[in-house]
Length: 144
Image (tube, rainbow, N blue to C red):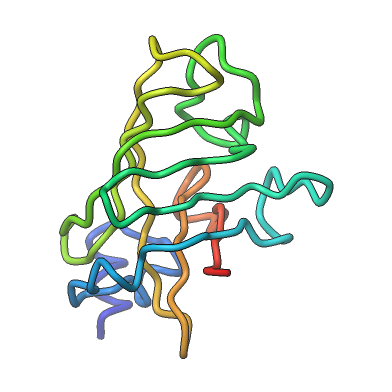
């Protein structure tokens, strides 16, 4: 029934039925998240990570900006950055909203991003959509 409703609403993301609909405790999200090898932009020699901190800040390492539609101008494809984060309800599900405030060493670049909180069986994953959501491509992070 949910799949039919999502289709009628125009959301064809194949992961949408697993988006978290119950607000997760912030403590479950705090920690180091690592990009999975099947994700676009994955570089084995220097893995992409996001370290979400309890104080509301985060550090991103080797983020594959070139894979996203909102690539910040004048920022190298795989860049480090810092910012703040929050947990918010977006439409009918919960997300981690990242506010990148320093990317690639430049504090002139600020950009927001959404990481969908996905229930993958026993564990949660964080997922940022790449391109058309109907295609199901995305950056998938697992907690280390």
